[in-house]
Image 1 (cartoon, rainbow, N blue to C red):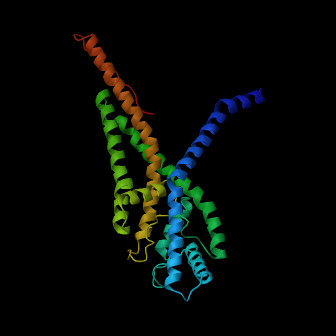
Image 2 (image 1 turned 135 degrees about the horizontal axis):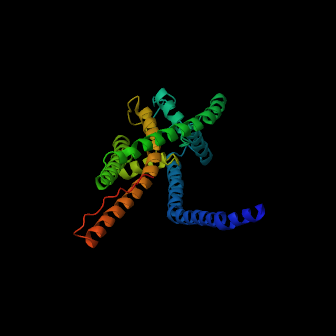
Image 3 (image 1 turned 120 degrees about the vertical axis):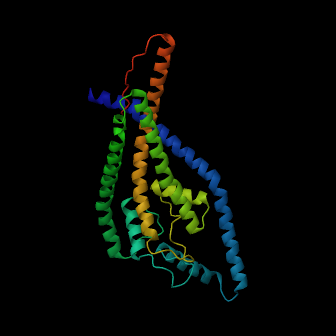
Length: 292
C-alpha cells in the first residue's frame, strides 16, 4: 500500500535523520553562543567606550554627528569600499578583483564583503549565477570523476596480488598526501605570509572558502596598506576552483583508499593463516579484487 510505504519510510529513515539534524543544529547553536556571546558583548562595550573617548577629544562634535559619520562608514563598507586608507586605494572592480568576484559567485561562496551596487550589476549577477552555478557543478563533477577514473586503474599495474594491492594503496596515499599539501597546506602558508595572518587564520580562511561557507571575515587582497601583484586575486580564484575539485576527489578517493587498505589487510591475514595451517604446502595465490 503506497500510504503505508510512505509512513514506513518516514518513520524508519526520515524521522531519525530529521531529529539528528535538529539536535546537531541545537548543539551548534548552544556551543557558538557559549563561545561568542561574551566576546561580542566585550566588543560592543569597547566600541561604545571608544565613541565616548572620541567625543571627549573632539568637543566640536556631538553624538548625532558621530552617529551619522559611523553610518556613512557602514554604507561604504556594505558597498565594498574599505574605510581605511584614502582615494588611492586599489579598485575593488579591476579585472583581477572582478575575476575573483565572478569565481565566488559561480562557486556560491559569496563572502559578502563585495556585491554589485548598481541595478544593472545586480540584474546581471542574477542571470550570471543562474547559468554559472550549474556550469560550475558540471565542471567540478566531470573533473573529479575523470581523476578518480584515472586513479582507479592502478590495479592493472601488477599481476601478483599482494604487490598489486600494495602499489595501489601506496599510490593513492601518496597522491592524497601531495594533493593535500598543494591545496590545503601550502596556500594557507602563502596567504598567511602575504596578508600578515597566522597559519591558523590562513588555514581557517582556506577551509571556510573551500567549504563554500564564505563568512567574509577573512578575504585575500583587501588590505589597503599592502601592495598586491595584479594577478593576486585571480590566482586565488583559480586556487578556489582547483581546491573545490580536489575536495570532490578527496571525498571519493578517501573512501576508496580505506576500502583498499581493508582488503589488503584481509589478503595479508588470509595468506598468514594459510602459512600457519600448512607450512609444508605451498599456498595457492588468489587475487582479491579491490576496485570499488
